[in-house]
Image 1: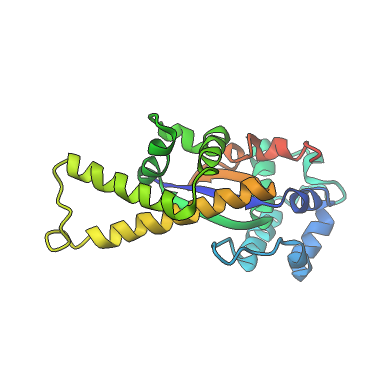
Image 2: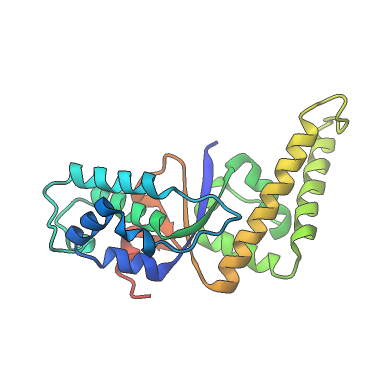
Length: 226
């Protein structure tokens, strides 16, 4: 399974970027002058690097010479895939931080808390993450992290797997990985919930048009005034 990816996005910063004529966007990325429009990064999380995104955006312009530089992205006579590619990179530009996880592990972080079976398709659902966030609002970070580890241990034991580090050297590193990942997920959702940031949701190798910003596609989110 690939990684599922969640990013905290400053909606105002995203609106400022996609409302620019493409010529201004191109000039700003070329001169690196738009870096001051990126939200302040949350040091607890990784996010795409400035130079990498600038390169991706400039490459988009090289590939789409026909784009009308005097118009905004949403007013281009381009196919949906082309618009979606640039829109997604602009959303990446406006992220404060990123949480990503191998999808096979996400079941551990979600199912016990929601007390129901989850399908992998729901990992791309804003409503599922919102449901989890609401559930976590009544917990503290340490309690949630420990509950994830205990559930993982219980699942292993039910499968007849050992929990002795001397018999399986991967146990302690895996336990620490679950603790760290669930801890950061709790922090991520808490900041999104309490500070009102948008959530960009996708996965590795997913087409840009199928990434969502909150509950709608990145392309459609450019039409939303908030």
